[in-house]
Picture 1: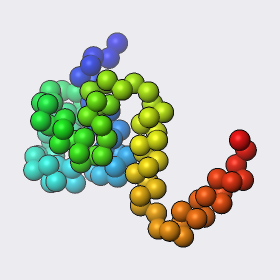
Picture 2 (picture 1 turned 135 degrees about the horizontal axis):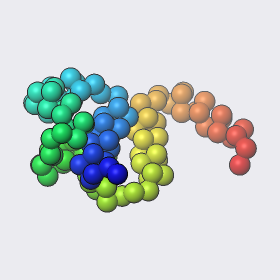
Picture 3 (picture 1 turned 135 degrees about the vertical axis):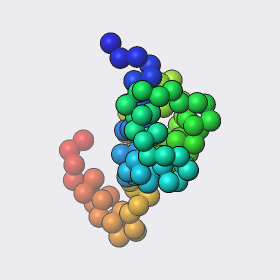
Amino acid sequence: MESKREKIAKRLKEARIQAGLSQEQSAIILKIQRPTISEIEAGRRKVSAEEIIEFANLYRVDSSWLLLEETETEGANFKFAARELEKLDEDQIKKLIELMKILPK
């Protein structure tokens, strides 16, 4: 059975990957050592409340999700989709909308 620390570690890693950041990039932005990110994501190091807030801001996720308070994966999927949509230009969004119109309902 996974501990809460291990579950939080998995969510942190998932959020980092969904944000499109490497451990190195995250470490540089957060001004911490890359091995610290590795230790946290492996569940070998506790994460402080302040660090959770910093990770949440960097990865653009809710801190409550990182802390296992939000268990609905659908909410996380919508947030991921919204982050990805922000990266698209107007033409790409129009094409995506056209594709969505032909998908079965």
